[in-house]
Amino acid sequence: MFTGPTAIAYSADPVAAAKVCANFAKDNENLVILGGSLDGEVMDQTMVDALARLPSLEEIRATLVGMISTPATRIAGVLQ
Image (cartoon, rainbow, N blue to C red):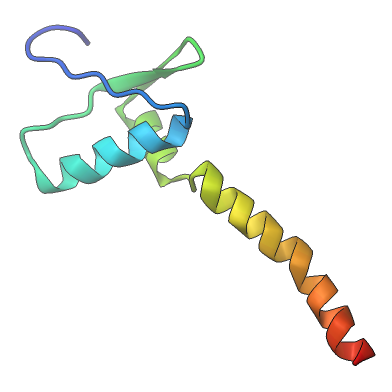
């Protein structure tokens, strides 16, 4: 994968780098994602695209907090 002009993107959040690159590649035909690596595993283009479609860590956390707080809100509403 390292032949010709090459760019490398990395992030603490494994989904963020894939999302940014995939979004940029949609608008710019010169960027072609050939593959990637996650925890030492080599990924092809389809795996990187699947990773880019996953929600980010912040989105998952917000969803979980929303799921946890909803029953508490309903209980408070019933008690009032």
